[in-house]
Amino acid sequence: MIIPAQLRDELLALIEKGDEAAARAFVIDHLKEFPQESQDAIIMSLVEEAVAQKSADEDLVHEYRAEGMAAADQLNKLKHDVDVAAQAAEIKGQ
Amino acid sequence: MSVFEKYVEKQKAAAPATPEEPSRSLKDILADKADSQVFGKYLEEEGEEDLAASLATGELSADQLEELAGPKRLEFLKLMERSERILETLDADMLKELVSISPDLAKIVNIAGPEGIQSALRRYLPELVILYRDRFEDLEENILNIQEKQKEAAESDKAILDICKEYNITEAQYVELLEGKGDAAEIAQKLRSSKGFWERRGLSVATLEKKLKDQVAADKLAFQDLKNEIDFERKRIALSLRTSFRGTDQLREAMILNLRGEALPKQEVLMSFSEMKKENDAKPTEDQVKKDWEKWVADNSIDLDDPDTDLVAKRAEFAEQYANRRAAGKKGGFWSTIFQGIFQGTIVSMLESMPATT
Image (tube, rainbow over all chains, first blue to last red; front, side, top):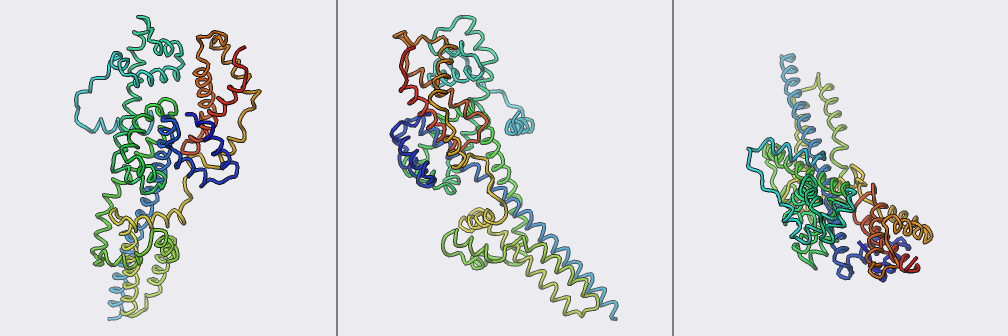
């Protein structure tokens, strides 16, 4: 894909400034001025980015749930141990 | 074989045998202008420049036609099938989910609609699978991971619901617990300031275990207190897990923001802005580009003095190959694409400023 000279110069000026947010906004706001092939490539890259983020998010949710369920199971076992200890204490006290 | 291909093979093995769809013939491919162009790019990538050139001019010999109709066509069609499968997974529902996490995609949907995005993907995915195989395979793996994790989440929903039922947890309770007012970022902030959930888990369980040991000589009431404490912790976990359900969008979003903020660093699989800036700062000099251009012209026996030589097309072709070589092995994503567009355009501009003929 080729970014036409005028758009490229404006975009490069923002990149040189190190202003990521402004450079991103520039591309999105001027997307219709890019050649069709470049528009397609940019949309593809945004989808690629969102899919990578979503995949990482799903990993986080998975880990969060697995750890949470493990903790709940552990506590359930502990509750059982308390019951056993309580019974033992009761027998001992009788 | 990529992870995605292995998955498809596994699915095929598990599914009852169905008759294979007839593959497109060479005639079908050549009759479709877009397919034919992509086939040409595939041949170039495979190092079959002569075949690609003949395909572009439509002057294919009988031998070349035979060669194209064989394994090359089948390999090409396999790649096209992979890109079509990915396109199918990027349906309206998936796009809706992606748009919810990408403000930029949301802006584009507002302008072009979801159909605009799908049309762009339909046109570009065949190019991605042929020219940027690594990026395509990352995309495949990420999509596969999303599908698998969502399937597993649907299965674990039941276990979470069971604990919620045990403690009579209602939707209103967890909304209330998290004070589900304001936007996701605000709720995430509240989650973050509520001491976190799982970093305290180990400590709370260990503390409770210790208390149990200390209760050997305790009275009945102390045991009941301990059980209540355990129940409180379990209920808190169940409430927290309930936020990860689909359909509780704002809470789920808040929970993800919270996890992103505290638990794990964001996976840097895509080219960052600063990496792109560094790449751009290291672009070749005009002298280097001139030398490489002259070598390319000589290697491809291009006569720049011939009036029939399409100089604009040749410059674009050289710049594309130059940019693709530079992109090889690099990370993908938005900034990678932008860098490529800038780089390719810069190379063309440099060539335009040089004398046109030898």
